[in-house]
Length: 129
Image (tube, rainbow, N blue to C red; front, side, top):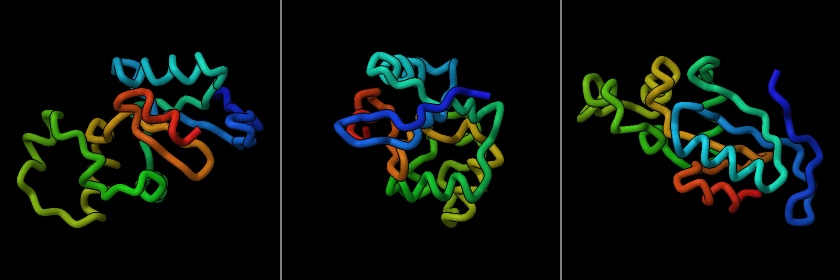
């Protein structure tokens, strides 16, 4: 099981846990993980392509990001271009599309307690720490 950073003090506050939804083949995802580690943070690592998210988990992350599902979709992915481009889907349908096709999820996502940020650029995640 991945390591989790429990009870880490960041900005004089105790953060219960930090998790990165990570794709090791993605440069930005690797850079974000390296940035966290450079700050002394050993986050829980969730390789979401190997261990896909469910509807409830993805919905919670979207709420933490304060984004709509469509805003989290990677529009550069071929599966998006082939199957979803120019489609008018509901929020639930976009969420299901990402659950069914995890490559569609923008990456990396870092969650610290009840806050989340997308690491594009990697420094974005520092705002929630």
